[in-house]
Length: 348
Image 1 (cartoon, rainbow, N blue to C red):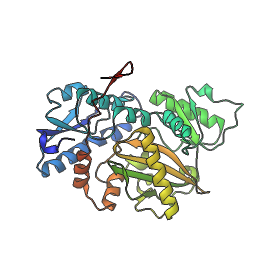
Image 2: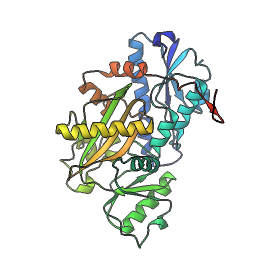
Image 3: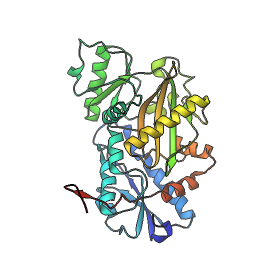
């Protein structure tokens, strides 16, 4: 890795969406959350004497990158794509790779694998890592009357993050409710619906940072103020709508109160899962631990939200670092994918 000082500047790349092409109107709040994060990152880096330049994507990533030579500019990659377009985050990372930039976070393949929740779960199961039983529905009619599903099920879009598409009706207890929720996902998010067995129990976030990845203090979501088991989820309101009950009553407790055995289990499983996906730099794995004590992987998040006040940043602070130190650490981990390609089995 070249030293940061070898570059002329640091380009803070992010999406500046003004409208969505799918989803609900409120989802724009999550999509625009990265704007403040980018400004905070840029400010922190400039305070350290680096030439950090904000580079919003307002039309196409290629246009935003055009003035900046890969040999002269390092990319702090916060880009997720405009307007909620599916897999734009992975496409932008692939663009950075093929253009020869050094950039922060995971590469395009890891982002694409983790974005597709069904594919992620298939990979986890193949390697013997625990994840809730699941079904993928392409139409409401795919919900079979002959199948006895292990209700309750948790229904969500197959390729969204940030709790987009997750609400009070996401946990279903009947075939009819399942069919209705699948229809909701298809109509609003234009993608298949993933339904997975709802695990009643504790929920943990395992954040990692470094090269190699190192586990930060574990965080547990506190659901004590929510009464019913099906209410105990981190839905869109809990994550983004600060005027809601869920937002103020689902805090993350960090460090989590866990036994050494459970802590090691969560940490080791998270690292195994991230290695499978190929995550790098920083990431987060979300778990449910059943009442019997079995941890199940819910989500793998490459390039999770690192905004001031967000869960990842709070976890970093519990490890003894502040926001500015986190930004510099992530930047120091910027890499360019290995310049080795294969054609017909021949190394070039």
